[in-house]
Amino acid sequence: MNFTFRPLTMEYIKEIDSWNNDGFVEQVLMTPYFESVNKTGTLAGPGGCEGFAAFVDNETAGLFEFIIQGSTMEIGLALKPDLIGRGLGVPFVNQGIEFGIQHYQLNFNYVKLSVDQKNKAAIRVYEKAGFEEVERTENEITMRRIL
Image (cartoon, rainbow, N blue to C red; front, side, top):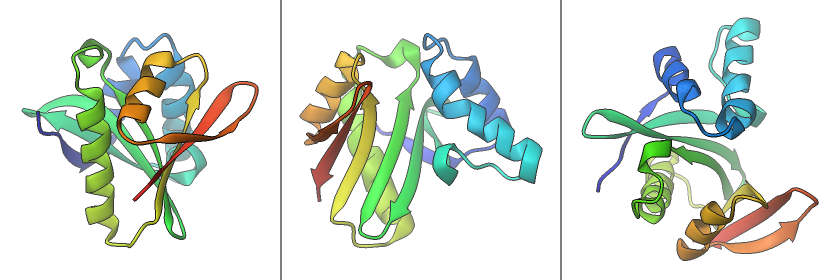
């Protein structure tokens, strides 16, 4: 399955916000977009990241976010709930990373992400996509993949 990526719009943000992900996506990922629009009139995600909606056959399928820090590309992502468990996680991660590399046209050494320790399914996907744990806090695991 091939994913395509488009810059977030308010329409895409509202759609993604309506997904039922037990509140995780809504609380952690979408609220900053609404707040940034209200404060500055621009769309910025957590930490000022740049967000993109992922599509499959013109249907919104996910969210991919990027923060560039020197030679590290930090990502945040969410797959549409009804697509979870269909074997799309690893292709989604890999295609999103490839999109980021092409979009920013920079030489990255690493890709980094953080994941809730309780999100065991996501952790397995990230490990299959080549990520390794580099740090653990009370609630989160930071993972990194060498490019």
